[in-house]
Length: 63
Image (cartoon, rainbow, N blue to C red; front, side):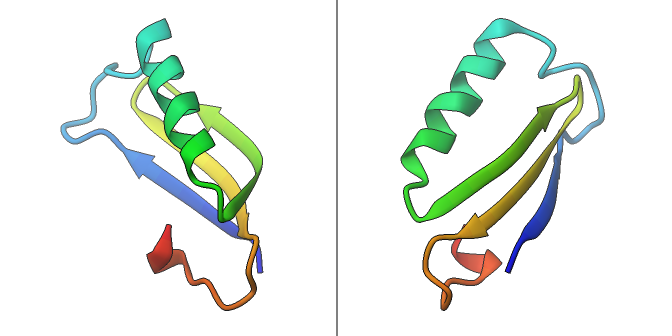
């Protein structure tokens, strides 16, 4: 199972358009050891993730 997730900043503003936000995202994704990241795209106000659980029984709710 592969999931396409979108996470948005509320209210929509350019909160992610900086190096600190990118570093924080990378550090957070490294801690998600039960998920395989296939693609990550960070835009100024949202993030797209293409991810799959490393264990078949995990659901997106476990993300």
